[in-house]
Length: 354
Image 1 (cartoon, rainbow, N blue to C red):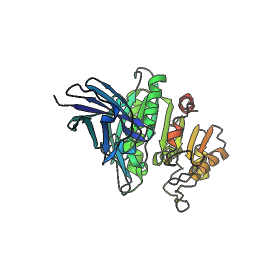
Image 2 (cartoon, rainbow, N blue to C red):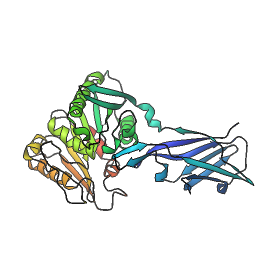
Image 3 (cartoon, one colour):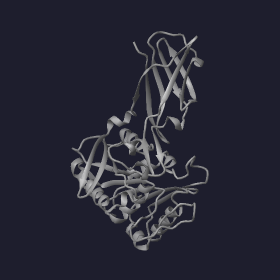
Image 4 (cartoon, rainbow, N blue to C red):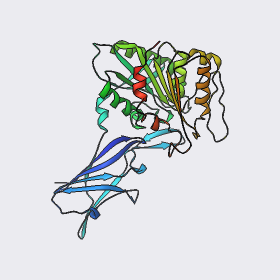
């Protein structure tokens, strides 16, 4: 019998990674920790624990970016999925075992999602959907908009690029009968993402379709997003203020076609809000997040938007700005801390459209 290894993947704050290995040996060995090791690209993978029992060996890995299932393509500004090439070795006296049948176990929560695509006119959107309860009763809907790095179609990138969809999934599973919709915009060379006209139209039509299919409580539709999806969260709420009960934009700004980008060299870009935009957001509960030292999207995108909305009389606005150095290693990723705030999701689900 051939020895086997199953590598288990899990969604971490930094996205999808291999976290452990389970080895089934073809015969029983007496092993100690020093006899089992793994490497990627010729360098050993840090191990936190090894448990050997007869023919079974369980190995837990330390968090290591080399164990991620995707890498960022800077030229195309998108994540590329690829399982890590992990080499396993067992030192057995004078011999070394390095022959294994290998498989990868997907993150468990993937099984809870259905996957489909939605077309409206020239716009096609990938969709991942999770639901608790049944459509026999009215349920709230959460729509989560990914960032530029997760553009694609039917490749699951929006669920593996970060742990926000899993955080919402886990909260719904334990606390709410609700529907979670994670749409995916296709890749194009431009960084327009959610702002392509055909995609904007398709997204609203998609939400309308889910409302009808899933018997959604239209007073409890929530919109959250990060980076390009954070700007889109502001944008769609401003364009459709009667649709959403609350929004959670991370590292965003209020986008609109007629405006120009601002920002200092090396400090990220953003758009200034207009009085008209702010006035259209004066009734929507908002909790906005950003890191002070974000060099991708300037923190002024959030600060100025919140100030403008408050100036129009919105008394239901919260803003969390993380101090420099608090969001690491990438200060753009304020969502890593935002969705670990235990108050956020209970606050969001408590909101009803006014």
